[in-house]
Length: 327
Ligand code: UFG
Image 1 (cartoon, rainbow, N blue to C red):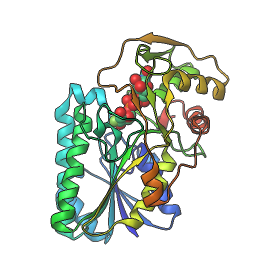
Image 2 (tube, rainbow, N blue to C red):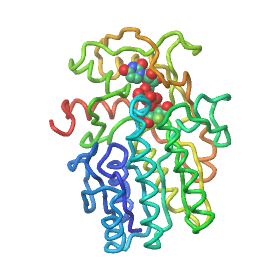
Image 3 (cartoon, rainbow, N blue to C red):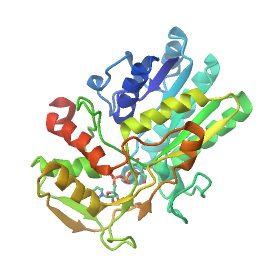
């Protein structure tokens, strides 16, 4: 299929581009490089531009006779979304609505959309099912929920076929170690811990050890980026006009912050220092997916079923690229 990957120079998008290419799809990347890297695009054509630039998007859709869109272009930091919601509404909502309109005008109606477990807010029941109440507790989660709703309405009214894939915590890197996670500033747990191992930070701060979890620290469901990509490939084949899939992408297993630090110590062989800090605003205590629907509808289960294997790939990337793509 001819696929436009919007945000294909970013962390998850760049891994997707490689998997699409390997699966025999033709790939075009659209990325404004605001957080993405040209070097991360290892296949297909890269068009540098914004999804809100309708003239550009429409010309790309037509010129490359695009059949489906995968949309990864979003700001995704919970804390930042609380501080600067305008940035999130502008890009994640206004940008996405513009992209959908460009698609509609060009008759491209298939889309796989990156959604998030942040649309659930603080879950009432764990593990989280797709039917759980969606009540986001931060602007980031809300922007994604608005897009899910727009997709549903586009499916109903304009015969769009979509999949909204609700990621839990994306982690890891390509096993070869040539593409991986590079954010500035870095806020994600595993890269921060590995930066301590690389002597780039003195210690990692645990955001609260007084949560009602098994060891007092927050629990998350970490999922390898290539496993996310594999689920997108499967979803692409399942898109049907007028229908929407809403699917959790997680492993079903949660790890506490302390457990992740222990795992990184084992993988690196380095005694990583940590300190206990206060809770971070907007953090739910525990987010773990019920992954059964992904298996049923997509035939998908994660290949990386242990966090150790995920951290090993991240460690390889960080060792080979201590300064990210500028290494
Ligand atoms: N954490 C620390 N110290 C740090 C960084 C993180 O203790 O220095 C903790 C956080 O409190 C959280 C866990 O480690 O409990 C994971 O934090 P990340 O920042 O790596 O990831 P988040 O769970 O906050 O965010 C991820 C995605 C978001 C998505 C969110 C859903 O990156 O896009 O899950 O809650 F919205």
